[in-house]
Structure formats: structure tokens, C-alpha cells
Length: 274
Image 1: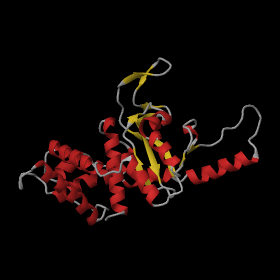
Image 2 (image 1 turned 120 degrees about the vertical axis):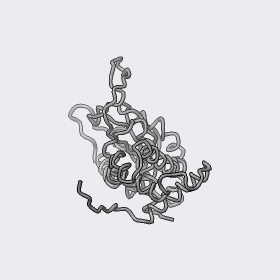
Image 3 (image 1 turned 180 degrees about the vertical axis):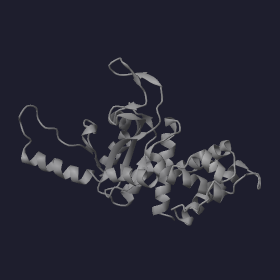
Image 4 (image 1 turned 60 degrees about the vertical axis):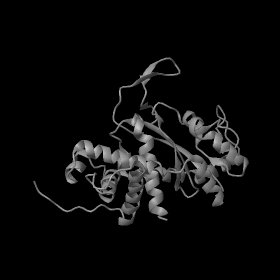
């Protein structure tokens, strides 16, 4: 075997902040000093390596001289502690109000996961793969997100199965609060997949049937909406590009919600360290 040095491209300050959260969790649990194989700092490094480099937990365990089972357990602790720090929807909307944002952007994506053979019945009465997304053409979990006008991610939902439509997932996790925010002057911009969401959620105007064309006002509206809304895709790109483990989840897809919420918390810690 050949040993070689490696650099984890996250700041030491971020690792310290994650370590502080882990330390607080150990105190809450009443963990006695000296009973853990890794200090809070090195447990934080283990978790950050997994998020940043998609490192295999077995390799992480070997590198940190702990068992595979302990590596998985430590990693789950990091995910849970960070996910608890992610803002919920009401906190995200409050933040948007306090910072005088003109609007928020609603978008959905499918986080790819390994194949799962769980079945369900579609609305047409057919048996389908629960976690298979026809939209993405692969297995995964549906995640809804809100972004600021500049595309910075503010909130992510818990996971729904990949076969769930964006509109259905939005109704489950977001629309009630978005309607209330719109009544207070904070509208939401969304793409055509959210058509029919209701007042306060702005979607493109559909082209009329046949050979009819949209009038100039409606075409202008759609162009402006598209230009403003497109930055919402930056939120998911920022999360999946920075935290590569989101590019394909090898754990149970039911954990995707906690994992992406943890990634959101890491992103907020990096950009707002205080």
C-alpha cells in the first residue's frame, strides 16, 4: 500500500463549528469523557469528508482507525446534529421578510439514490417503483426548496418518494406557509410544474391551444418571470456542487431529507459563520 497526504478543502473554522455542535450533543446525552474513539473535532472531520468527497464510510473508518459500524454511527450523528440546525420553513420566510426580499423562489429536484425495489400504486392504478422518478429518469427522492432572489438556498423540505410530483410535494410541505407569506407581501416564483398552486405563487402563463399565440403582455410576463426564477436553480447547484455526497445517495433514500438539511446547515455555516 502507498500512503499519500490529502487535504480536505473546508475551513478549520467550519470543522470547529461542527465539533462544537457535536460536543453539545454529547453533553446532552451525558456521554462521559474519554469513552469515545474520536474527539468531537475528528468526528466532525469524518463527517465533512463524507459530505465533501463522498468518501466510503468503510474507508473513513479505516483512515480514522475505527470500525465500520462505528464510522456509520458517527456519520449518522453528524447528519442528525447538522440537520437539527437547518432552518424550518417559517424561519426561512421570517428571514426573507427581515431582509426585505421582494420574493422567494420555489423549486424541486430529485436527489439520485441507489435502486430500491419498493412498490406503490399510481393514480392510474398501475404498480410502479415508489422511488423511481419519471421526471429525472432514475431512482431518488423529491426535495422542495426555497431560494432567495440571488439563488442562495433558504430552506429544503423533508424527502418525498421520487414518484411524487413537485406540486404534490409542495402542497405537503410548503404551500400553506407560502400563501400566508404572500398575504404579507412576500410572493413566490415557480416554474410551470407548479401551475394551479393558487394566489401568491406565480407561474408562467400557458400557451393557448392550437396555433394561437400569447399576446405581448403575457409573453413579457413569462420572460420576466423566467429571468427572475432561473436563479432558483443555483440553490440546488450550490448544495450538490459543494457537498458531493448529494450527487448520489448510497444510504436509504428515506434519509435524503436529513442529509440535504444537514448540507443546507453546512452551507449556512460557511456563509454566515456567526
